Image (cartoon, rainbow, N blue to C red; front, side, top):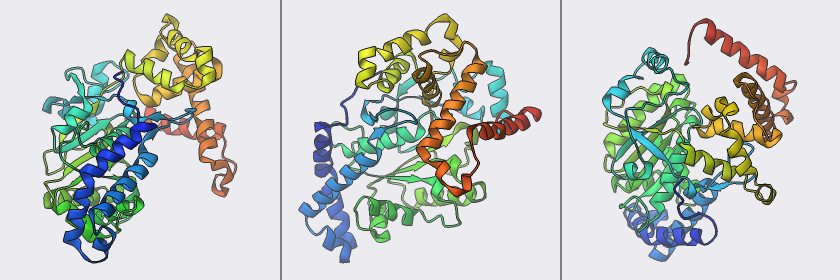
Length: 391
């Protein structure tokens, strides 16, 4: 895996410094156009630089570390290399509808959706060259991580991938669970979280200036009844403020190419051996693990011929997380795929319940791992009975 400068320790100061130089002036210029109380907050370049530094600190604190479920400690987002595949029209046609996607999956004779006709490219470089980008991936492939990483890149003036001095704004689209699809108000609210003036006018002026990198995370997580209105709101935003950069993410099975604008479609690539090994190294990184060489032993075990089924699962962050959770408990992998799935599911449900503290909530009274597995089995049975691979 390509190793880049870690976003820990002194590197934070470097990013803050670059961000201050690059975006502080942009903030000051926008505030002058807004005037009023907003300009009082950012009335000189010193205050604008302070605001940009605060944004950098809070963004780094909120998004700068990747910590997956059950992971003992976080991993710097900047240490993660993300290859992507730029999809051609033929590839996109394979999943324009659910029947198309199912047919493509069945014909591939593989246990994953990765298309082999497109070559891997560096994701950050691809993002630099396309103003409108649609990021696709399977569940747990790292779509949200990729968007957050793009936000970090926008902070940098010299070493970053973006030449423009852009202000990153990340919107989690699952929050649009009502008829309120006002994206400008959502951008203003996001600014407020990071210490900027909570002014829709400020957000509008920033959009008019073409100074935003708008990261729209999780099109597939918008409730079905609001999907069309949110899609229309995004189209209208891009049309009205087309000089900004827009990056959206969506699960492959939920993607429909019905945006009016020409979004370049990319797909997060499967992990190769180098990335799998680095992921395992990052996971087992405590002092005890280093002393016991847990990562090296896990990697060797995973590559044993008897664990071929486990190795096939290791090509996305989510499934590799399952494997690390299993190995952490047993220091081995179950010999069959069914036992591996069963063990991974047990651990995943237990870890998720513990981390979310759901047993402490009255609505979840009586909910336990065995009952959750029964519920999941019923959902799987219905899909199997109807011969449905996706829903």
